[in-house]
Image 1 (cartoon, rainbow, N blue to C red):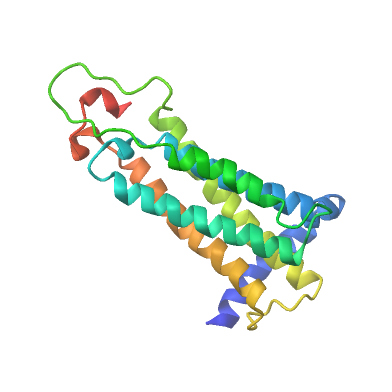
Image 2: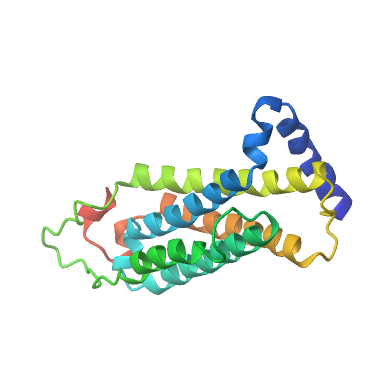
Length: 204
């Protein structure tokens, strides 16, 4: 099983190897950290635009987002251990704190279909844009996972699915992140206002 996974991932590592001109950019700690921060804030942004958080099922979406939030923090922490930037220790806590303020400040009342004209807030993105956000998130998650594998495989930092805790947790974090984001993507594509007893105007 492990050998099969490694063989499949090897295809992508060969793909990365073709981009010699961008190799130093891809493997740089700053690029990998920026990628992680983008994922962190995109998850918060996608939660803000998720219309399910205005329904009785909002706890489900919140806990999925919270799990992603914790996973992303863990990834940033372990990345900082493996590939630290020339910044003060735990500098990233400020970034996480800002993201947490946005995330935990979103507590909207439940909206029910009362057969009146009750459109969603204008600040919320439409369904097409919401779907694009989740697609972009899945792509970035997968790219980040494969990039970390490529770096460790190419520079022989002992990835090989060995019990190296930091490496193990980095790949575990990205794996769970991909799964949870795919769940969000599925819910977004299959969102219909009537399923959640929302006004029809919320279908947009």
